[in-house]
Image (cartoon, rainbow, N blue to C red; front, side, top):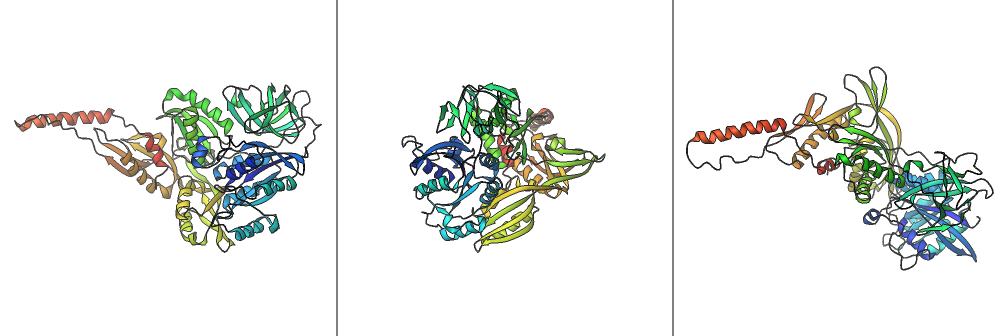
Length: 596
């Protein structure tokens, strides 16, 4: 056990975590030259296409140092703020972390956020400056930032280049020397923490775990403490590039178990595995509970696919424990699910994964946050869905969630960022110069205002130089109204939204204009209206498509033409009464990009 080292890599998005992980695997010869490719640990097409890590990936490396063989378990983590839950799980399975900072960009908001997560868990931090071979590298300046942030000696800051492999051998030596070996009692009853799981169509559910005490052997009868279920360990092993079976996984090691479970609800991330013969006394305290930030309805395009969508979401949840969902129904879209996501990128990724991995085409409604609504009789309702919002007559007052946002940027962009946050009903709490060329601004903002396009706008006004991180603080009283969208007087459920009263008119007007562009014209007039209660606040009209019914009349009496036009008018009137308007999926997606 003294020769095991468990560590993860934490950093902001695009600071080179996956590239450094590639070099570590190459240096330790874990991956042969034939199998080597860029982002070798990112196994989803989506990750490679976007150049981001979505899932934490664990892999075991063998490393010889001072003629001794060491086992290094590396967990590569995502950098985007929406996937910080993955990071908290990786941290729970480690004793140390490489804090990676890009030499050309310096410390960013998500770096600080993940660093605090690691420090709270008592991990040994090894700071590494990456990309030192780039032209714009500010090595001295970034070293100062790291020293100020974690108070380490200057000489302990490692310098490396993930692209060329410079400094990677020194990093491996530091991992062995500075990161402590796992603590645990090999003779105690088995106690293992499940930190991830995946669904395999042939083998069932594969759970990844870290052994804290005891050991697990192939063929053991094991019990999952939270669910109380018992299984036989058909196969146990360690995580190389592919699953590598072993007879036994020992204390301090990271491994996997296959028990032939087919039902996704039986495996919970954060659960404890123990043996039935000699059970442990208590379950391991898991990592932080996941808090969904953004809610949206997800419905199958064909209502017959409801059951299939449920199974797809079950399987996806195994691989993404931060996804939360419950069944709901809508008058317009039939049966579907109300899903909770950690942010807009997370929502986009889930939608794409459903399409790619499970071949499910879905409609997603307008995303919104969770409101607290108090009625006149003093009852509290948690409102995640516009259809749950009470009538204005019954409503006493409502509260919306607020967040504390940290934005780190260059001083040149202070003005535009302040304007953006003020426009989003934000209040500045503090601003601190971290260095002469880097400022941290702390804002208090309503969560509903950052759900749509805040992050994209922040990136564009700061030319990509601002980094953003946030955490929820409290609920505050606010004037929240339900805005309905009507087509020819009929409510369109999926496009209803809960919105602050001061924003309703602007949002309604933009929504009506956008739908006017996107809806195909019919042979009858279509009225698009945004309404709050009974009051219409915005309207656009799509004029009817005119079919020339008089084309076949050549000359003759005018009354013949008039007769045909009257007949057409009657037909249009009848059509308007019974005609329905099909809303294309592009209309639902366009709502998310209203300002662009």
